[in-house]
Length: 458
Image 1 (cartoon, rainbow, N blue to C red):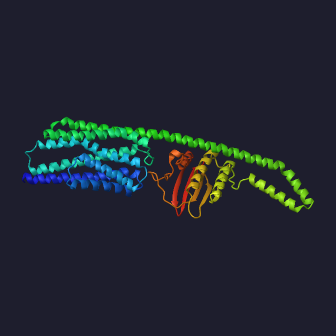
Image 2: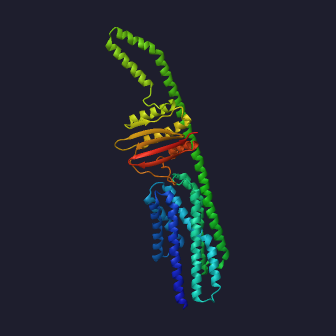
């Protein structure tokens, strides 16, 4: 077989593995970006857009550096993500740059292995061309598998470290995360420029003339990935501190609500004692009015007395003064908002659950229900039941819309910014349920949102 024909086959083998590498990379990127986007379909669309852009840049006869082509692919990733989901644009900028670095790092880390194998093959030029072609194909296959493994490994580790995938990225945080990452990007551009100038001046690739340059490139790739992980770990620590501060603020607010509830219970009991104290006088006045046949005055007095007693007692009764106050507040707010509030909740002394824990469940669950209720006939219902050592609480509200779920698909994401003190309701309920070795279940069906809380009683 002539050398001209073999050169054609070698070129075809190189193009096939280039195609496979970019196709696999697009699939890995789609898997990487899926938790940051609304769903699998949107992530696949981004991966497909990246592959098509790289394919077109390959087949269109344009003279450009490879680093420029991959930078354009980075831009395509950002634009595609923004088109399928316009939320959290700053995070998408960071993810697009990360995708670009993954490509370069995988290439830099795998290049010494690839170059070494090609060098060893070139030293055996005496072997038959057919065998040489087969060995060249094996080397390309090994390099393809190595790059895919490196890219997938880097993406998987970043996915594990980057936990707050739906957290809104602020401008300050974006700048903080991009500064060290941008340094790696800048060095890669400088390296590409140096290699181009070196080859233009001397007519030989720096990789062939200085073997150590390949290993320095690998070392820089490893350090660049270390910088990425360090940035993400630092970012997560910042977010964890912020989350703890917000949770403490929410807890402080709930304790203040609890104190307010206790004050209202004390006021209620004070009103009851006052009514009981004056009840003898009220009865005596009514008897005198009836004895004197002053029916109109007696009726008006009885009505005023009924109204006064009505103001001192709750419309909702749950067998516990603390939960009575909470349910009464929810009833009043629902009435003002034109929401039908249905209550079949009982929390007697035989339920060994701390009143503060129960107030957290009701305040958060019913508060979310008030905010999320919609539709032509809005309603909220709360129900409780006990069977043996299992205590169930079910909160429903009318809901017509689409929920966004967290990465595990267990809890819907809040539509409000957590920086405003929202977004922890279901999380707090889940913590309380875990305290009693229970759990929560959330579902949306037939125009209603249903939250079920299960507590195991000792």
